[in-house]
Amino acid sequence: MATKTTEVTPVPTKEQQSSSKPRHAPMYRVLIHNDDVTTMEFVVAVLRKVFSKSEEDAIQIMLTAHETGIGHVATLPLEQAEFRVDQCHSLARARKFPLKLTYEPEN
Image (cartoon, rainbow, N blue to C red; front, side, top):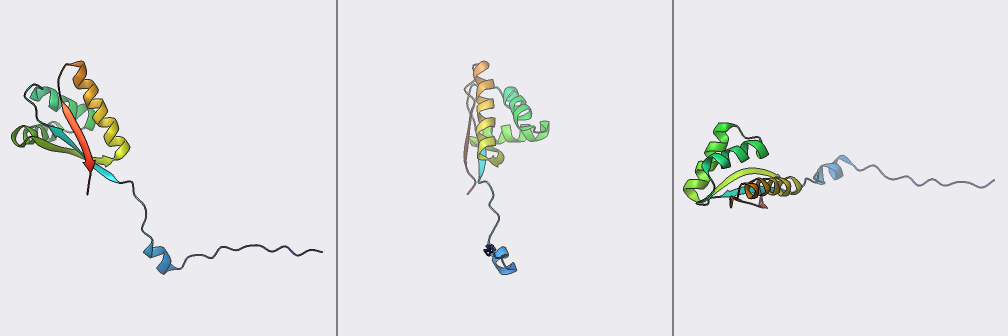
């Protein structure tokens, strides 16, 4: 009768487990840029609709962009950042506004 050999995978020790960090999706900062055409009301409405910002947060982000030229909207995984920026641009194009959002790596 033939003997079967079974391969056993060793279980990592606690030291090996703790040394390996869990992998997280890289995060991206979504930024809104000021322009002289897009209305403040439209910017606030888009931030509320696309990013689920409260009225107060949306106004603060809009004012920061208005005063400094750029405002931080959110920090998201790449796919979400791309999707939401595209949503904002689509809404703006439909209203003929040149609203511009960008995203950049968090680090």
